[in-house]
Length: 263
Image (cartoon, rainbow, N blue to C red; front, top):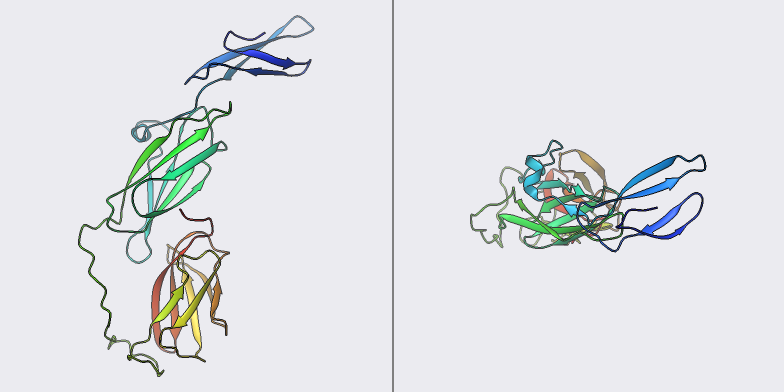
């Protein structure tokens, strides 16, 4: 037998299939089975619409899960990570995420989201999430607002179209049009390969490269081949720094790797 909120669809000696026409938040029903020896087994099941906690709940619950920030905004960028909690679901449930306001990359795994700010001009980054519970019903959308750790209200200056050479780091003996050697990296962001070229058009040069992750740890090194391609599809999504060396000259640029498909 079942409690009033459930209907038996089918049953046999080992199992029973039930459904509920009333899906509410925080609702529990009971299934009762009578065994051949006359004893009874009672099973309480959650028949409820999933509910995602508000952000303020993270700072008051015993299982506190406030957003964590890793890295910094000086060259490598920062990452914001938040674990979504609530009732009527767990980490293995189905989640849907949608970016709302701000410029950032968003990576999700189960009930955890990682945000990489892509601009210093947005003080707040927002997104929304909903989850599908074990009974097949979706929760309401819940919106979260994260403080951008890289926010800088200062105006962004226009880049100098004709940067002067650094006298403390002489350029190698190569032919360039304007006396300044600059590398061009594309595509950026990239999901598989990046191409590295010299804007000056110099060829037949030996270029060494090193990729560093957000903790400044080298994750890939090598020498550019004739096709000037570097495979990055085996790295985790995130912000990296690529160092390119040509003789005694070194240049560093920021590289975004998006192997999961940034939104």
